[in-house]
Length: 569
Image (cartoon, rainbow, N blue to C red; front, top):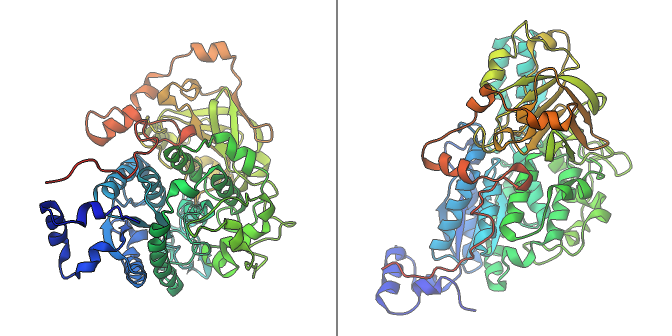
């Protein structure tokens, strides 16, 4: 086969000389005739969950060398969920665009994609799908379990829990601060089934990770062993021309949805999988998540829905053991980066701890997949994660307490005169892709202090933003269209009755449709919408799509392939 990189390196013309000479730096002559494998590395000191990926990249490099390829580390845009403001989601599409252009512009034949923190694996997959070069993911892995006062801590989930205890007066601020160093025990991403862990296991179920690798703890030497093997596989994939478009099908996404439900994964996976499918031209819709996943039992007893953490899931058998329990729900035709069907990797899988990975007949939640809601409050859909919600609130009517922006919410939520009770429905708007901008993780609003002091720990919350995969509560989120796109959420008023019925898949405000349509959003709501004048934020607001289709930019949907038409000199 003729390698793509040969267009840069072969021949004795001036341009080939330039490309070879500046890259030689001690390489032998035959280095330019081998498969050139780019190791796309999202490591950065400002992406704390990914800092160790440089060590992982070294193991990949050794594997590429061993298989006869030439490894080339390529730093790409890394996003730290905990660090960047206003929200990492604002830059997911920019990261994907930068990665796609870098992959296309350079003389590379295949890709090894190193990601961990929430947006890095989605953006890598979006870019790889659009450039369509042979590509395989190595997830960076979760951190080890830390303990505080003798109790295991789930990062993210216990931040929310402990911070509410402080606000309720049940935990001192000094003790809360002391928990910080225990929360993050080692290298790696969140150890709960948050978005980072979810996207790792979903990427494996999708077929883009070597089966059995996702969920390997970041500090475990077996991750480096897997990275070495993945480097070898990347060379093989180039030889076989095994590109994303050759094995990622609707069946692949169906398997990813089953896995998402079985592990009790993050709602954020919905918006990311929709975006990846959009790059591939796969007809995936919001309704597919409900149709395929809503009846799947949650088998993994892991925070935030259960008790354990990612290190426990790995020792209990990992994702493959989970998938073996629901093998009958998987599509056997879906292939992986190995060229073999996903289901072929399940034969030797075993559950070693039935408390962590529940038997099929004894699930954590019988029907725990993400539910898609519709109604006059969410004509294009909204999501709820039943496994993380309170069963008593899954059917509920309550008086709306409306907040026009996140700033309005923070200014008033702890006001002792706030007219709110345990039956109220908190409504926050202006937090969608266009309105914030970037669709931040604010939907799991902290409860008003007066309710916490009464012992209330959950109420129904409705928002056009997202929530952390580590979060919990009865939260209706990803409401589409968002308020800033003219959605009815912008016309709800405090005092309106909101009705939630998860079994019926409904979220409605009990206001006649003609009256609701005639209302105008309040001036405070409109004033809270993002109005950037320049730069990426301006481009984003002008072109971002809604959550129900993946919140990609309209001009980035689809692919351009790997062809480059003109020389550089």
